[in-house]
Length: 311
Image (cartoon, rainbow, N blue to C red):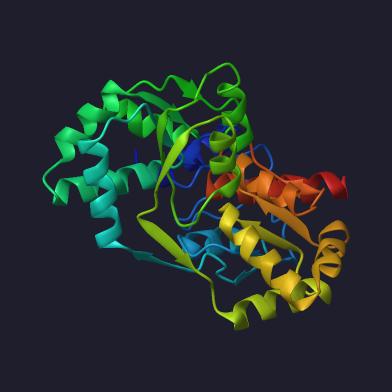
């Protein structure tokens, strides 16, 4: 039985299948969501304009929104990434040649990128040996899962997927004089670095990829759409998207109007806890956050939100 037949069979029996784990697409009692042409029982986003702030899997997300009756608007706030090969080479060589007390990994993809860089230098095995010999901290389930593949069990993990959760893990650990390597991805994290330095650590930052701000026209368009009430929700898939929007709002003096938009008509939708934390830091109090950190689950949670409002 193929997936389409399975869905029809389950619908007939009023049971609930899981459809697409990669996007986190599930069915619920009131609707079925899929990107393979299976129609929904109910469309909960009719008349809603839903902004996709990410740059990955925008077509799949657009299909999900359309199948719920909504209109997707792609406004990529992720920006571009560029890889600084020369800088990462020096940093990786330092890691394998010097004593390191702690490695702190903040993203799964960033950790994988570091190992790919080490592989090109012919020092992948050496780097893994050094990591295994040191103390390790990890933020986020994707980071933890990637380290598990390398048979590395972190000594410290966050309690809630956030940087502040990682701080709590270090509460009773003495870092004075310790050499701490922090893996970053796309942007600096001054709050994390300051926390470590305040506790006496010597911090080395590994930042293989760096973000370049998105096009000003995209930021201008989305800001105007929010302020004028033209969009109903903005789906943020990373914290950096939140920061780019509010950095632009600060430069243009529109922060209060953007916050007002998110407290009135527009819904801020965060893919997970880290992104939700970034929204809270900017002053957004109301948001929609799925339990499962997947793009599809984010759309489903938004559907449920509107369903609850109309009931």
